[in-house]
Length: 249
Image 1 (cartoon, rainbow, N blue to C red):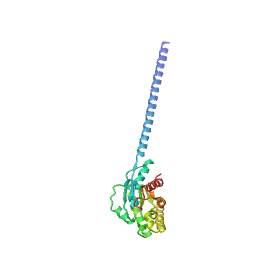
Image 2 (cartoon, rainbow, N blue to C red):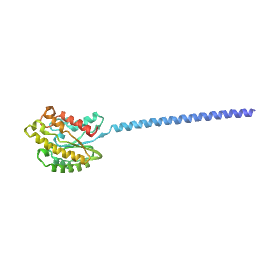
Image 3 (cartoon, rainbow, N blue to C red):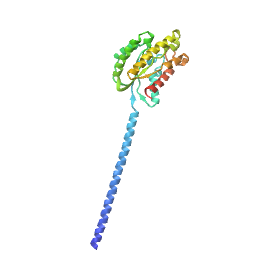
Image 4 (tube, rainbow, N blue to C red):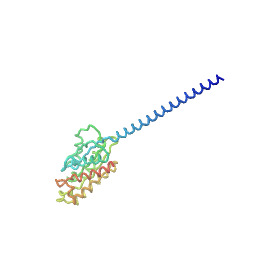
């Protein structure tokens, strides 16, 4: 009888010991699982923040409308575009601008060839052609130059980079255009812009029309800079907002 009592007592302690160990193991496993979940969540947040902090690069190619003739540097459309993008949660590094007043399409080609590029760009814009039109250069010559420019742009953009073609503004709607045949200017601008739009469609590029904004200047003098020809910072801001909507938003 005494032996049976000892056996039962020993069995009780063994069951209790095993139960305690099992409970301890369960708690440790749950704790490890919880810690792993926390670490995964933290890593996801870190990755998310890292993605949010990506800074994009912008290369703006063109003429006086890109370099911002008649306005301060911070009023140029590429710089205002970067600000608009930032306000909408998209962060750009300061833009690189290759543009000069008076450049025709082949002048831009020559400038790109003589420039040094140490990196490729996420976004590349092209706004060119007004000086081809002003100097009565053939549209077919302009089309050929666009093909040459695209080859160079493709070498300058990143593999998944985006290219935007911007329409030519109608300078005939400015006070400077008052001494010219405004209807003729508008028709010629339309012809060049049709070439640009067709070029964009054929090559799968984005296209934005800023021409209609520029034509409002005939009744809205605040859209023109002090030189009576080029856009003011106010007009460039409207461009920047529309460009953001078409290109990124």
